[in-house]
Length: 134
Image (cartoon, rainbow, N blue to C red; front, side, top):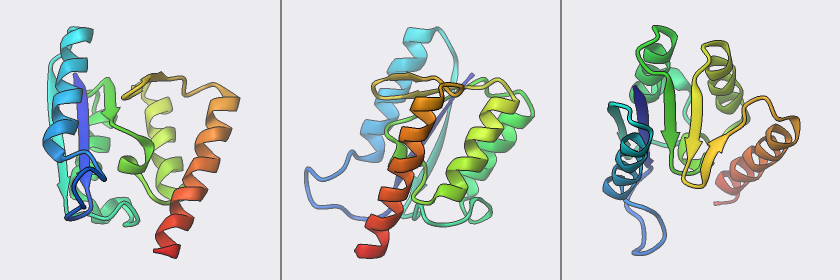
């Protein structure tokens, strides 16, 4: 099963962010392409800076991964998943430990590629800094 995590932190200026519905459609299209059933996890008006235990849908998704219900995960882009390095670390470790594949809009993320992980870690620092600046 593909777990589709959709998150939007609040009202956005037109054209500045993909809506929850658009994120859903991208995930559903991927599930169809992969021949997988899917389950939606929607976080509306939820900040990516919050710890996992305060993000009910992300927490539910990670539990479903740990229980083997979800074997692949889709998130539109990294900053929809997290806006702090701690969350990124916990999510990636959960995915690796349970052999769960990760997909973003541009394709599958190799969770064991050191260069890709370094780039993702750097990106996580930038999005966390963006939150502090704004």
